[in-house]
Image 1 (tube, rainbow, N blue to C red):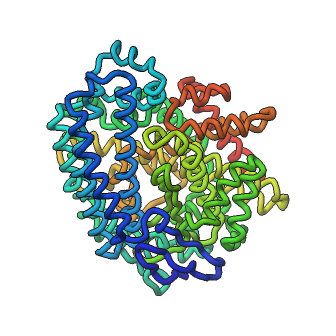
Image 2 (cartoon, helix red, strand yellow):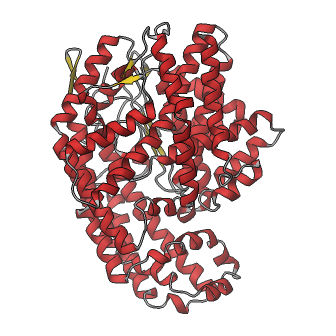
Length: 604
């Protein structure tokens, strides 16, 4: 069912499969091609502007008045947006086919060129952070500079962790031969792996999808094949993990971060105590959520225990029909439209204007993502669509990201970006709207039970499983400070967090010990994963408000998305009467999952 590989720069005609016509994206909206004159011109202009910017403002930022500093920030923003456009294009070309060596070389070349250019700009935020608070407060009385107050707030939050100018530049320039290079090695290795299942070679995305196949024998075959292939490559993945954890430890030490996850929390604009409260609340809820649900599912499968390859299996009496792409589009957009016609109108542009790449292909980036690119362009969504209900939920999830990114684009390049915790809010809310819409149209008890079970599993994967991932990272980064971890030790940590989080009803074999190695977040974005649980619990609370809200909720919700990165979570949630700092907040979100498990128990 895979489609022919498109060219790296233009996706070409959409492939026709039994899923319908699956769309491929139009990257020429960014640049016509890797070797286009437009791309070369932007690169040359950015280099020239960066040199001029350095000459005009280096060692002079402290002397700028309010209007002068505002003008400098605008010039900085323009250069940064051009560089981000270039890198967005390079990454999306690469994600289209990671197995194409030319794409990898193009991405690396662009990273090196953009890093060289942006190194001329590093001084700017460092000098801003040396302006005394009282002086900056006075300059912020200038309206043009006041516009950038949220950005200045976030830049200055890193002052305690700022290094000397030459060290900051060194770290910046070495990144292309450090973390980003190890990330590329991980991506290309994963993209090249093949899994022999059912008599044919599969990509990782296809193999993992087999874990939710109707055929139990196929699930078992896929699970053991995944464990075998990952196990054969485990020493490479272990080396990547050890290297990146040590790299992070060194930088955290220089920047004076007390804990390995504190830097991520700061960039997410969320306090350590709030994340600790989330972690503790979910951990305490394991017995009421995952342990109870998987014991119930084991009973549905006719036993007291459940093999790990059956964890995401369809229920025995669930037909889990294939949903062709046109129907998936209609399901998601109709759900969005019931909530907000404006939200649906933005969503339709993704389908109509070539902003989505849906088919599974050899070499394509596995999983799914929404890439915001830059406000002067538009976001792109990557999927590996295989026609299952979970794929429809993934479409709704990523489209939520995309709508958020379009709305936040009005804040401009420097302030459109949203902290990860709040970025996941829009995606999970879009997913919840779609699920509730589908559930409301389902009256047949067997089908309703199957839908509820699938939703509970998705929420457990988003909340319980992601917090377990977070705990895995905490343990790995903590132990790495004492020395390099062996593949066996990483497997032990993995099995410990998995058994504690999923509960006694789940059974595992030795092959599962290698499953930690395919999770990209550990490589690309250390300690990212709790953001999923944060967003899911937040959305559960938000949706509870929506169900009892008077008119105006949708307007307030879209205003929250439009704010981008200008407001912190306390300010964004205040209009809804919610506070993530409240000790009872997380329990409120978890109770929705618990209520669904309660209903499933009554359905037998």
